[in-house]
Amino acid sequence: MSSTTISSPTIPKSTSTQPKIIFGIFVVLNILTYADRGIIPGASIEFSSFVATASDSPAFIRDAPDVGLGLLQAAFMGGYSIAIVISGHLTHRVRWMTLVSGGLSVWILAVIGSGLAMTYDSFFVLFFSRMWSGVSEAAFHVVAPVLIQDRGGAKAGLWLSIYLSAIPVGLAMGYVYGSLLANHSPSGWQLAFFIEALVALPVLVTILGCIRDTENNGVLSSHTNRRDRLPPSRRPTGIKTTAPTAALADQPPSPTTQQHNFAFTFWEEISVCFQSTTLLCIVVANSAVAAVVVTLGTFGGASILALELFDSEQVAAILFGSAAAVAGIIGTPLGGNLVDKLLARHLEDESYSELLAALLPQINVSIGVSVLFCFPTCIITNPVVFIVFLFFAWVSLFTAQSGILMSVMMSVDTAHRSNSIAFTTLFSHLLGDVPAPIIFGLL
Image 1 (cartoon, rainbow, N blue to C red):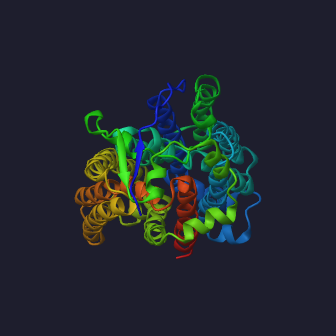
Image 2 (image 1 turned 60 degrees about the vertical axis):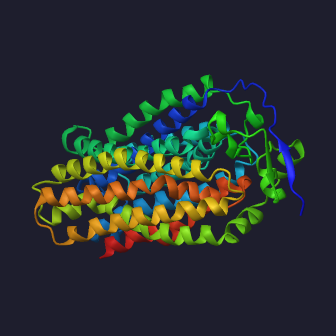
């Protein structure tokens, strides 16, 4: 096959909001939503008491409150898993700002409902509010990584890591914040949810009133120009390749291509994901990690307290959450920088397969080191040493996160990146963190 020469396209000046501002909003949203996820684990004893005594709690939950906690987490993850597939499908058809603002509006109502569950003394109000919290979050999480990969340039890995750093920071904040308000506020844990809604309102107003995106008519593009990650001195004026599909991937989508991208069916999107062996392997591995992380998140405070390493749940929650947050702040950006450096060395490769071949071993090393640090925690009886080993295990685990998400997006054609994120999330939850807290609660 003859080689093809493609000139760099002339890109018109954009009137869109600067990418850094958009990325910053997604970081704030990630902190808010993951803080919301951390409230119940941070006050697990108080929530166990609530589900055991709520006026409409089923008998089996009254007898085993931990099962009720597991069901609350499963409701959240179940709603999130289904909605993220739908959101991934809608990214081809709906402006991303519409998806995000609509999702945030529903999220605000859902967290208010979570707080009102205490007022109405209702397990099912809390159950369905948590489910809708999960549904609404899905809109953010299929949009942000793709926008960051498209518009982050040479620092896309770093920006992706900053976005992901919001996960441990948010979880830790929610963990500590939920525990403090549940134990010290006259209103109890319901105040934690009401405050979240108040904090989210200005973010919603900012998105609706201040953010502009004219690129690709506001719809996520199927195009990623990898050459934009190169320093200006290394950017070529043309690119030669023997693979027409690779060449086309470096061109802006034509109107015809855009119209085709908007017409994907659910089956086409799912089929693309199932046809990627790399993506399937990532899903299986991620499911095991998700099961462990969510189980720790749901029962971590109570489990550490049961080990008798700390005197109270509040102390355990603060130390556990703080260590996770600091590890995330250190490990995730470190991993993002490593991803950027690695990709910078391989940007002239003709396919994402070659990039994945370089990226996946780095991920495996990070996870392997994390596992090695986890093993000693099974026998450690000193609380300081326990937290230190757990901290370094988390640092290593968070180092892998940017690479994992980048690999998920590289495992499929650029038009299906949101779908690959949704696919990974759905099956990781189905195989991992939806059943895990229920099974652990039964044990």
